[in-house]
Length: 609
Image (cartoon, rainbow, N blue to C red; front, side, top):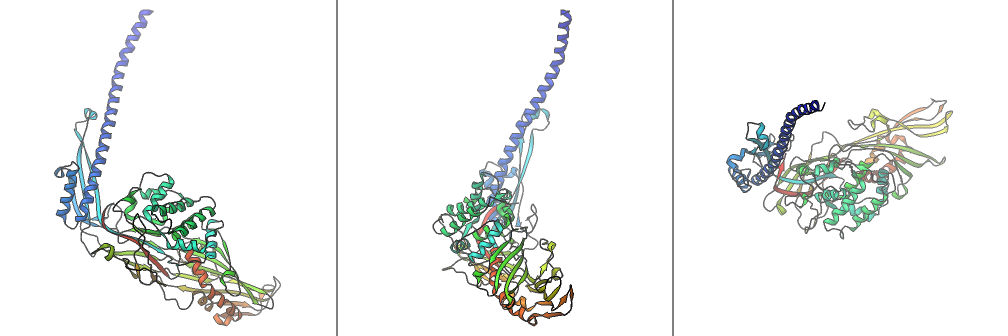
């Protein structure tokens, strides 16, 4: 019995030994693969870093291929590489912003370029990564590594399409912002003035936001792809102003932001990145604002705050008491519905020629309550207004750097003011949120604005009305706006002209320089906007009806409407400023767009894709 047991154990050991050998070989292979892969990835990172530096060194000489190649070679040698072996391909050309990602480098120049002078280089490098343990299982002694880097010497500017508003009615702005946050916003006129007049440096703001969120790595694009709380956005603005050393001089703006923080219910999350086009900076690491090549360009605090609140919640209603506006016969204005187009296009952008921005697209339903149309009966009239404001847009056409950049740089922008339609009437419900096409006049229903008598039995006067005014044209040509560097005292003309001044946010020891906006109009407004609406009034009146049947119908136009026209014309005329202020708070203008160039940088090389 014992002898049989030992025989079985000996046989079992004979079976285990080969299995152990096979397992050991597998383990050695895995260790070899992991070791060689780690070496490969480390060498690839080193090669990519050296190639990036070489491309950046060569980009300033892109118009001279020989000089560019010499600069790249010298940089590679300094990083321990032999250019004769490491450089696989080297090309100079142009960086074409209008092409898709990965296709923007063109060795023959951009297809739409007037000037084909080179401004970019593309370098491909390679080397062999030696195999160690995994060489036991391969006939090769090394594995090839290759990387590509593209750098361009690109002029950049910051641009925004905004309202250009110089002041706000605090009561109206508070009502609008309260409707956006679903709470009660109460800022003073001085605080709104501070927000309107203050710009924060874009990269300083993004870095402050990263600190607020506890983000210590990644790119600016990744930062803005995250959902961010509105309170965090406001806190980052305050921190950025402090980092710029502006606490004392912008105390009113900071006070306004701090007050707003306490007046927002909760901390609703927003996709802040939908507001921005970071251009070349989207792939840069968070914290790169300290780089000598960083673009110093500003963001207006009022616009950033307003647009952020719109992203948070744009579906609340607001009732604005009319007593503060001094418009006769007007009892109240109610914002019955607000539809704000989700920002599929940026409001703020930073980049080279070809960079585009857009203003907001908004649709509003307003209900006006007009008092005492018929004094003897004490009867008022409810007038529904529908306003559809399409977005304006602007594009950087040229950044001309010559002589002393701080003095001689100019930026040329082409812009179109947004078209608008204003109606008395009610749109179909489904039309409000369909931004893919404008609301047609046929979708605007005439509305009952007056009804006297016994409802359902006898009507002495029933009035249904509709009116329409169009502003601007989609066929209007783009307007050219010119921006120059500041010289002497800078002030904003009102209204803005076609010439603006390039702004500069505060940064370190550098003081801020005010932005001067330029304006592009899509139409020449004659007189006032809403007063013209009354002139197009079309009224179907039934002076006597019985049991739903009209016995005495009358159709009237414009001034023929008589008492209704007499009452509505001054009310609508007086409302021009109110409606304009309401839309400006939301970042919208009717028939024009005000453009700001918030900063510019000439010719620093940057890595591009």
